[in-house]
Every structure is written in C-alpha cells, then in structure tokens.
Amino acid sequence: MSKILEVNNLYARANEKQILNGLNLSINKGEVHVIMGPNGAGKSTLANVIFNNPAYKKESGSIFLEDQDITNLRTDEIARLGVFMSFQNPEEISGISTLNFIKTAKNKIKKETIFLPSLKKEIEQNMSELSMKSELLTRDLNVGYSGGEKKKNEILQMLELSPKLAILDETDSGLDVDAIKIVSKGISMFKNENNAVLIITHSTKILEELDVNFVHILVDGKIVYTGDASLASQIEQNGYSKFKVGE
Image (cartoon, rainbow, N blue to C red; front, side):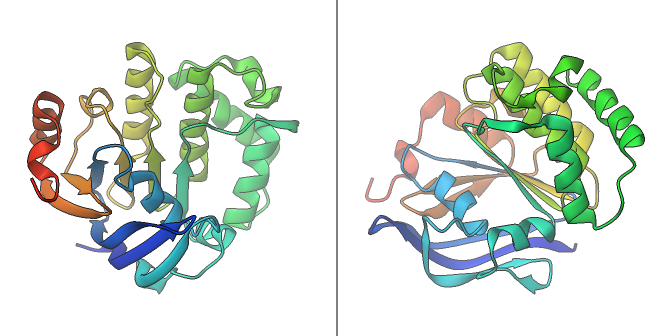
C-alpha cells in the first residue's frame, strides 16, 4: 500500500517541556487511524508538530508526506501539499465569510480559477448533508456560531479542500450525540482510497459509524500499543492504566 504519512523517531518540546519522545507512526492511503491517550500524553502536540506550529520545537526525527520530507516546511507549505487540520477550538475570523474563506483557501491549494456559482452550489449541497444552516455561508467565519456549527464548519472545509491527509484534533469534543453522528457522516463522505484520516479523540462515539483500521495508544510522548477498532472500546471500559509506563 502507498504511504501518505511517515513519522520517524520524532522528539519535540513546547515551552522547554519535553513532550514527544521518539514517536513513530505510519499511515497508508485508504486508512483511518485513531490516536487515544491520557491527558498530557502528546496527542495534540503530535498534530501541531506535523503541521510545524512554531510554538513547538522539533529536536530530532523526520516527517514525510508521501515521498516528500515536510519536517521543516512552513505550515502553509504543508497545507498546500495536502494536509488539513481541524481544531479543538476553531478561531472566529471577522470580516471574511465562510464562502470567501473556502474560496480563497481552495484557490491557494488547487492553484486554479474558482467559478464562484459552482463552488457555492457545491458548498450548499455539503452543508445540507451536514445539517448546517445555509445562512452560515455568508456570515463571518465562526463568528456567533455555536460549538457544533464551528465543528461542522471544519468538516465542511475538509470536504471542500479535499486534502490527502485530514488530521482531526478532538473534533468531537463538546458535541452532543446528534452532532457527533453528523461529523462522523462528514468523515465518511470525505474518506476514499486515495486519502487518509487521523483522528485524535477521548471518546469512542465518533468512531461508532466509521471503518477504523488502527487505534494507537499514546503515553508519555510515544505510541506504546496499536490495535484494531476494538481497542477503543477496551480503553473506554478500562482506561489507560495498563499502558502507562512503569505500571
């Protein structure tokens, strides 16, 4: 199978605190991977380090997207190559509508002229699938949106930008059962044999309607165990104590 993401022996820190400690991860096209772990284990750090967030300092290791070394590329360069990341707390941006935000981002990534009427029609169709109010399309990005609307908007962006790899950092946090089902539906709409999804979560609810290939347990900055989808249910029932270093 063709690899999309390869993380090799990655060490990283934030604010002088060591967080990632020799983390390895490989994701192939067509796969859905899930990362779970106790608070402070380094789950969100991994997502930010893949995207080269300047708040995090890589000490060693490498990150490849397909055959290209993206370890030290800028965040915008990584995004243009086909990596998407949703956030736990999506930013509110005044002065730019959701429609214009998606149009501008798509133009930068695809490097082609975007025909606005066709794009608007396509977005409205996806919004309908995600049970989003059409009025949100022309409102300022995330401004005044509910928590659920912000998270659905992230999934909408993912669908429109069609990245090679989607990293979803606790997209399900703070959502009710119905909203989680809609987010799961959006992930299923996105997923195909030519892309991949990496989901970071504390809950199994978002996974119930997804075809998950691997679940990874991250403890103390490295993956200590990998299993199939059933591992997530085991964690929900029994917690992480058996995986913690030194226990």
